[in-house]
Length: 470
Image (tube, rainbow, N blue to C red; front, side, top):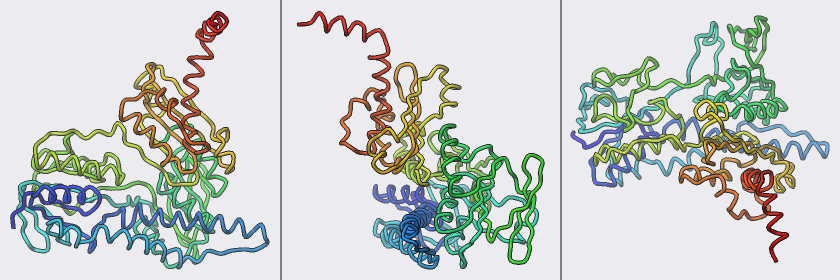
């Protein structure tokens, strides 16, 4: 069977490319290893994790309220898992085979492997393609720790279906998955310990964010920084982690271990070499700015290229591929304005450069930072956090960071300002309904005008003019 475009992988990048190409009249085949479309995000990533986080936060609030009246609540883990399954099933409907078949896409469920640069084999059937998209995603990194496999462990692919709730949970890795799941299980009643090699959790975040979140999350769980797991052993029903920190050894007992140390691309069984596609030393597909591999008719998107491992990034990459693969428009992918969130409480928002990166790339920069406990809406709800805006000397936004309830929602105006080339003063000049959380942006941006108007020489000249003016 011959196709204009063959897409390998049914996650965000693959689905976007397949749907877009089919909508323009291309003959499209979509191959996915799972029985249902949606990729890791739907089945074992974004959707189930956020559903679990929601359940955990609801229970946490209820348990605190009950405790004030002398009651003790215990989470029903089976009910939590059922709620997670319901969320996945509801969203699955939007990514159903029927929907894509109605768009004209031929669906194949099975593992794809290249047999040449224009041919793939799936379920013993040969498909011939004019162009291809590799969007096979990634899998959890399984570290080579002595005794780990024998003791057993969980990953994001298994933790949402664990048969028994762990009273003691050890998490190896302090990135977004580690801290999100750590806080969620802590709020459901687990004794959680996060073990991280770095000096602070959330290594990709701005230093102020890392400091704040390390202190904040330490109130709900134990965080062991600069610590590595040397080996794992079993003691009865317990898993014993042998830790090394500052050249000192200690042991930590847990009922379950969650691995959250990163991701590896799913290119092992793809036989990319038969298509002549180059991979890097970690197995990622190498692409140029147009998301083309070294074989110009083969494109790649999503986790497999190792750029930004986010669903929204993969979706944007899928859109770019449609215009490049079908029409040869040669549009480049840009990550300059790519935001991301960490869905803890409080939430973390990240856009652009950190303060350290900005100083390294631009030299002198200006920082405007506002504590949210000085913003009325956050005061009324007894919430904390901060907004941090990073500017160059001309007022151009280089980076924006926030920690606060719902930060990923109310910081979107900064994404628009940065992507539109607007300067900081545009954020100060907006009207913000009182009292909403986005006023935190206004308060931080107002610091710019305070510096320019009230802390400089203009104030003296204004005072003279006011006295003169009648």
